Length: 284
Image (spheres, one colour):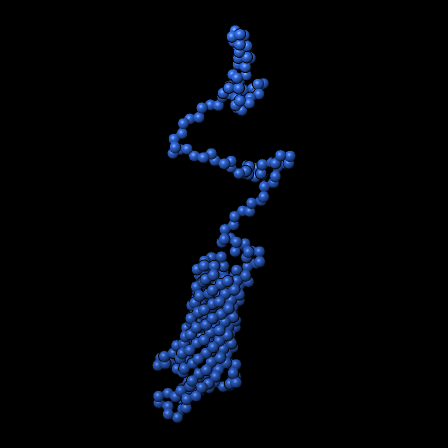
């Protein structure tokens, strides 16, 4: 009996030994459930040891990027996908210039200035001088051309020694010789309409002459030269020198020359002079 049991156990062990060795093979990826006919995988190369400081998680796969030809990778079963057109970056300073070119060159401006009148004197004993301020609206449809309409206010002592207040409405055309430069030189020409209130007072040695006010109206023209410095696209500083000549348009225009204050002062129909102006211009 014992010999038969030993004989049967030897037969069973001999039959199961190949299966046990195959299932326990270290190259079997599925452990004990390997396919007996599966081809064993080659062994993996050993990984170099890493220090705890250098160890890092495995990075995720990078997103799809554009190829050198500018197209996205083709999806299975489809042709190459066209890449969206990328607009060239435009600098902010060039955007306004591009918009200007599209709608045409056009500028509006507001000019504020101080001014002084350049007038002659009737005699060395009379101290005369007038000054004031003014403003003008400017429209520049072309780089070398601007149109301007403004009002000037002057106050002081006229060449005859009388207190004088004057307001003028001016219409001018400005021609810029170098409109693309920072420092721009221009010529000015235009027309003016003026009104003046003059207080005529007696002299120290005249006791019979009474103080009274006179009103004068004038129409004339002016020519001048100026310079403007563009501090920025929205701001400019400058000044000009203007010469004018004008005639009277009030009720006494065309009359004989008037002798006032005992015949020592004379009022003529034609008057000439100059203006020196300096100020700033705000553009938009």
